[in-house]
Length: 138
Image (tube, rainbow, N blue to C red; front, side, top):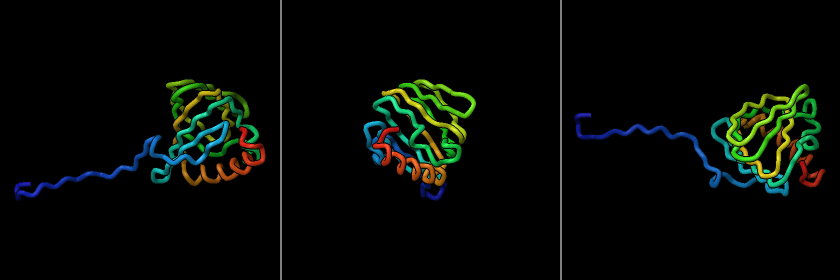
């Protein structure tokens, strides 16, 4: 700047990594690590075995997930079931899941998703209650 004082402007960006995000869900069917980045939550989810989300979304609008997600399949296969069609994704695919879906995953699937935190919290409250009733299966 000419006056001998160096000025560094560095924006602090919200960030996380899978190994830094806390493990908040640890069941036989799903292992989930979640961290908030501003108004969004990043979800690192691993599914050790096949899982159909139908039972855990009961009680939500149309018994489907009302929260939008933007994500990527790291490994395995993810199917999103909508009322009138299914969409399938495999390792390397990036996707947008609008409200109104039910996830079905193959064992060994790993995903990273970004979701609006407020909507995700409301959804996960119902999912958690349903998981406790069905013994952690989804």
